[in-house]
Image (cartoon, rainbow, N blue to C red; front, top):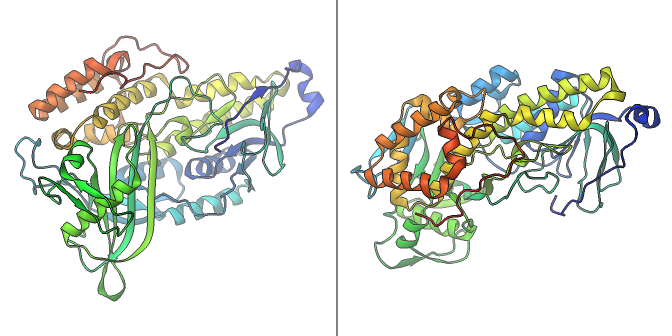
Length: 512
């Protein structure tokens, strides 16, 4: 959906005659975008709330492209709420999660010391998840439409007082009480409430067959910030195994850091090992380019003694983080990336998106009941605003602002600062660090972050655990670019906000 959208409201028909003139909408909800967010919402609305749903996506019969890693305790919590069968949609799980955060900047931790987190982590089986979601949608009567919206048809959305009309690019026309935008972070269908200048997570990954690797098969490697795979001075030019040959220097890698993320996946043919490797730039503005990640991954694997025999699949992740929130003064309802629910400091999305969809489904269903009870007096504008208020409550917005500060801080740090920061982060009490990574109502640990004084306690505890140079950078960051958006997260001031107030952009001031 890359074409700029110009949405105009229909001339308002007098409310009492609208239903008489045009009849009932052809469906209750049109969802544009059949990724995980749109498909799981469609299933909830149709099966749990009895709504008539149309799901529109030109790639509706194609596999979802991205892999998702999840903390199992979050996945289990969602299954208890949904009863979907999420436990049957995991590809592989590990009982440990490892990180390498030692070396310069870590506060004296040896370069090769391993931080081990005794907590299950899993890789989502995206094929099984989509298949199950589509089957459940079909059984609940969801209508599938293979088309795009807004690519070739001008003004594809038109709004009357009690319903909206969606014109798909293949000519299909739908009328619905609600239109949901689930087409991703870069959608042009959703109007934002303020300036939009997100950081971006970039990652290049491969599912590979290798002779061997030095990683523990019982653990997934969450992050490896070591840089000893490069000489201290000069640069090394790659052989172009994954992309164009490129010179890489340690000075650049330490200034603009990336980390290795890896998932050992057991046996491969001919006695080899199957493993997923990914080189990740956590968050940057402007984003790192994929060829740089490819070059770094090649050199890192060579240093590890890993010989790649076959690449089963490549992954290219581009995740905007900290996008401006959607305006509540619009009829299009955003969800998932379009709604800004991606974690602004980590890029986590799957569990947050799923948790947020529960509130959205409930709010949409509540307003559909009002429309059915008295269609002539139904106010679709007020209903859309009510759904947004359920998605982005005041506390959710404050938690989100806290994460935005975290993302702005992290994107400005060299590798030495990140080692010290994450060393302290994973030394926090479990409910505090897991709650930060989850950061959404209904997910475990969120009650350690859902009120200003709990976020303040988290910040104080983290500050006490990190090295002195990180302590200083955190204080300077709060003062220099945190602004009102940061202080209202951790103090009982300026908290009465609305979704449509001009957002206080962070990161515009000079970096520390």
